[in-house]
Length: 137
Image 1 (tube, rainbow, N blue to C red):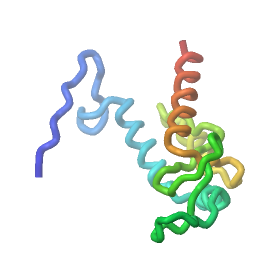
Image 2 (cartoon, rainbow, N blue to C red):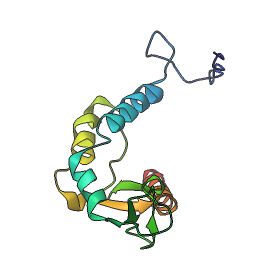
Image 3 (tube, one colour):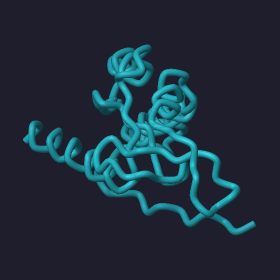
């Protein structure tokens, strides 16, 4: 098994977590990605996926369903779509952010989710990131 290349520590950034190996940002990033992974199959999100599907009738006999992108309205295989939170889940930068983050991550209403193809989802995500970045400045 190949060894992972160690990141060069950036100067001026204190590593206060995990015996001095993680910055605050890296620490909360791990928490954020773990929570997202834990709720990946949240039932309202899976129901939104189901509602955006139809039986596939094309030449690929192994493909059973296809999914419509809420943005571009084209049809895709399941591996080509992602379930988007209509209201952005946002960032997680402190312990105070955990409860609001979880509430936005796990809404109970199917209408809080949209199925999008990967390119449309990336465009939307980038717009949201830029809007957050510009509102901070």
